[in-house]
Length: 430
Image 1 (cartoon, rainbow, N blue to C red):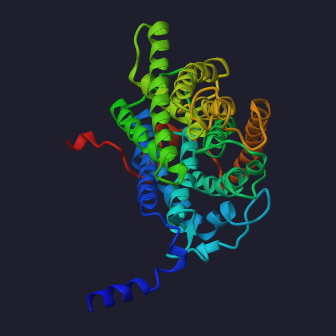
Image 2 (cartoon, rainbow, N blue to C red):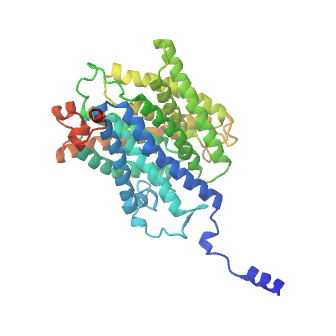
Image 3 (tube, rainbow, N blue to C red):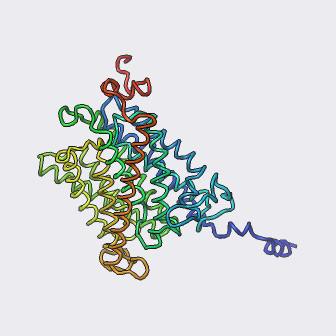
């Protein structure tokens, strides 16, 4: 009787065929990565940015990051995911998956449920416009920020995401190497922040009065959260729990540490003392620069990339403000934008299927180092040009519809009070 029951069980049909390809280990890792990337935005980036502004604007930055995550989440469900990843043309996806049509418990993407892939990509879409906040911090209206973020997501982020990561995207077909968002996230955010800083103009008193970070403890705490969350950002981009994800995490950590040490060393030589702000900014530069190359390089390549990132981004930051006198409030362009460009270019040099330094076996099909570097430069140039033009147009449109900037009195009082009728710190009540 026992043998008969076992035989009957063996003949029973397995679960729905759509579930056969799902790997529970991959799924668990991707769910964890999704949480880590969301953790980068809330609270990581919010705290990192919040500590860097003046006390009268701390809540405004926190609320902006929070609101962006909320509004992007809704747009992603309505049409964002479809425009980014549904079949379309080389420029943009179609609307066949609007309102997540056809995305159910049994739909899959590789070895994970499609629902997990949807949510994972949502966290990338949310953090990118949140990064742009650093370019116009302390002077943009909350209403203008919301409208601009929505339009920018639709007009800039979604098309570039489709170009690079969708199977029919034109840069994907060209063989661009961008593992986790050097072009899609860092170049778009950095260039948009730079354009926003130019269009809005400098903060009142810029280069005339000190505008020191009001709470470095908050900033360092947020930086630590970003470092941890970046393991999901880069490691999760493997879309599986295997050797590629493990190596992506290792090289991410290596580049972050190298970037932090390089930035601190330069400060030590140049100013006599290393700063807390310098070490965390160098860390972010290392993280942003390794991002596009994280799935293609080994530890040796990551060490070189991180050191170069700390050096180049340090001088880009100081040059932008002191030489060009552009008030990119929280250094989004020189850290994320320049880092994204540098890392995307470096991926074409250090790529290796053996995950070494110079073995040159990891290029797109049919390419050598020269042709791969050419594609990388094409991707960088196209992303910069498209993002700069569309961001400028959108800012001018928002300015005409709702106005971009708070008035002088509101800026002097601070955005916490004038935009939200609250204060970040109520020390009088203590």
